[in-house]
Image (cartoon, rainbow, N blue to C red; front, top):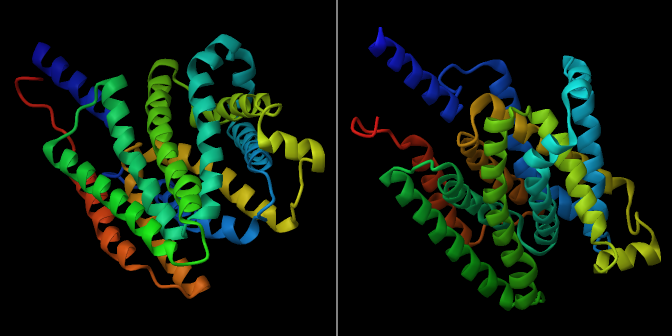
Length: 336
């Protein structure tokens, strides 16, 4: 009986820690994954086409968070968890679970909005994949989740691709009318810093879900509200705050500006759903598919084929993410 109990316990731990439901795929997993793939792939192109150069990043992020909260509350009301939330929710519990990740995500979203405007769509998407490396790093630092040898090799491939893209993007733009320094400091660096922050926030969110048992919708609402408060607190000293005070919150907005805002908000909710149903690491398959969507959309709508650097880096990114997913760390007999 003891051996059976231990085997059952190990089975439960394995299932709960991996969160992997792809072995028994269902309609929800594939539907949410498909939607998130399209959102990830199209977001950079939509943001560049629908957002004016003078639109403040703060107004975009805050509006996106408001839309995200509304959508999450409606979904909670639909599945009947909203009433339970009002009875059990506490401020201390919310701040403990969502406070730091929310502040990190608020800064990350601002950095991503800056990068959208200054990088090629495909280059942005590929550099953004370095967040997988930082997620793995912080998962080990915070949750002590180990990586296999193959996964470590895959992460180094990902870093190589990111360096290749950084060098290639700077040199390819140097001969054009764009400022290479602006591309580096307002394009490449912001998206890489955002990737570091994304990895840290992902690890903190997983810790919160394991300890606090928060649902994806509740985490979305809490983090959006807290992140918005942190962003509004920076109004007084930020350039965006000065612009908003002079010209108004919706300066240079058009009806088209709402498209990337709503798209991004829906994507935030989908991230939580895909992670909940399929596991956080498996979301990498969605990311790889999104790269292909970005490349296709950029070629179709901009008539611009990928650069040589992108063509070299793309298989590196796809290989690294695929290997990372295929060869997870397995507990050895001695460790078990």
